[in-house]
Length: 132
Image (cartoon, rainbow, N blue to C red; front, side):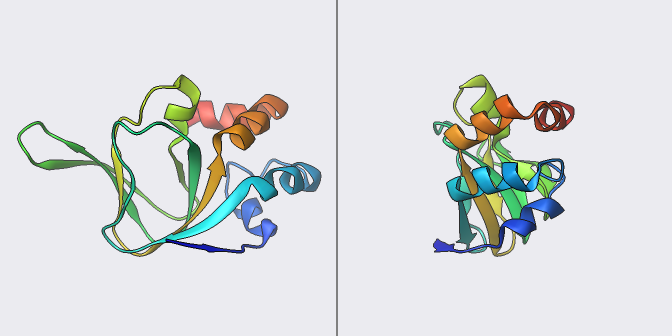
C-alpha cells in the first residue's frame, strides 16, 4: 500500500463529488489519501469497523461475501469513479462485505470525519449517496 499525492481536480470526474464547489473540494481534499493496492489485496474486510469511504480511481475491485460453505460470492464489480464503504459510515455498523482488488487499484481514502462533514454541509452529495 502506497500513499501518493493526487491532483484535487480528479474529484470533479467522480459523480459523487462533481457537484461540490472548488471551495468545498479544497476543504475536503486535505482529509484524503491516495492509496495503491496490489491485485487480489483485500481493501476492506467484513466485520471491520468503518473508518473511511473509498473512491476507485483506477483498476477494478469486487464486493464479495462468504456463502457460509467456504465459497466466495461476488455481489458487484466496482469500476473507476465509483465509491464503496459508505454504508458502514452511515449506519455505524461493521463492514458487511469484503472488497478485493481484481487488478491493481488506485483509490482515494476519505476519512469518516471528513466524509460526514461533507454530507452535513452538502445536501446534493447526501442525495447522491442515498440514490446510490
